[in-house]
Length: 241
Length: 154
Image 1 (cartoon, chains in turn yellow, purple):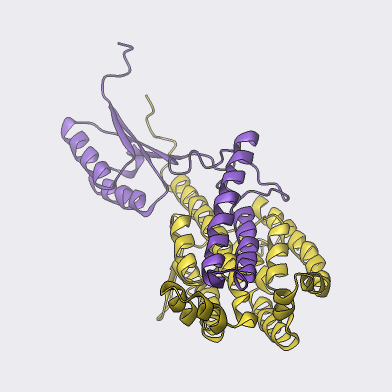
Image 2 (tube, rainbow over the protein chains, first blue to last red):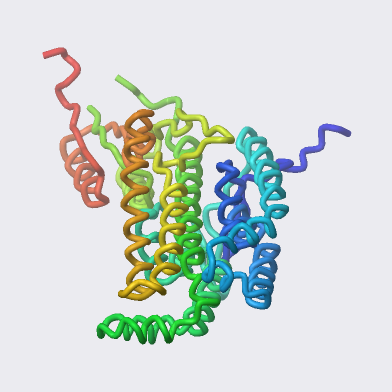
């Protein structure tokens, strides 16, 4: 009875027409750092999107209600307070990321199937080679666009929505306008401290996350195509010399 | 008589193979994907699979951008420009530092990124050879060579 084959215990990846999720071995300090910059980001990075989205909302609510960003702005001492606040969350992250790494290491050893193409009536998702810098550059224009390019639609739309909220609430665009016309004092006065301080972590998280996602999907594409070629074009009767 | 060509992993490779199968039988095509698992990924490996530690770069630039925005409020040019200076400065510093470390550790994981699959095709007439070569170059093979008279040791 033990020999019934139930497929791999740990799949390498899962693909839907709207998103690709995969088990990746990564440096645990990477999700830890992003969860320090923006709680929830680390979860999104290691593939726990729903939890990450909820923590994102939590971060915005708590930060805005307690005015932590303002505290950071008034005195850099405030940052220690913030670090203290999310220290628990961070150590949780090292543990969580290591756990995912161990699963990924186990999954990479067995030959778990890799899907190459998914299609439904609304969307198409597939593995293909993409230059990761393309995604990085689009993410630098608007966070979320890089994820849309790498076909991670759910994360892309989510980040895009937050970016729009932040850029609107922070009045960053009027400030850009005043900066461009040389009215630096008005540019400083019009901008909202509470909101604009989200922008650096939002931007750079989007860049780093979509970079790793593109690299991982390139890797999966290579693995899948390698398996296909070995299956079909390595006939033992090939007359070599 | 063989034609040897090199492809990167791409969709055009599969299109080329599909077209080739219209001309010659499947058994005369040999595809050799080169092994990408030469460098085992360690759990604590700080580098991404391409050998570039973009995590370090974006980490550094998010800090410098944040500092740029914060101190931009009290500096003359305002938070937007100082934030962008912080971003650019952090990214440049990060990339340079990253390259220095990479050179010192001699991590060149991305060197052979696009040269991945060797395709060997056996042909039986000159006409076939011409067709095969035109198909391969149409689907942007990275390089093609015809081993027509190479075996006699001449």
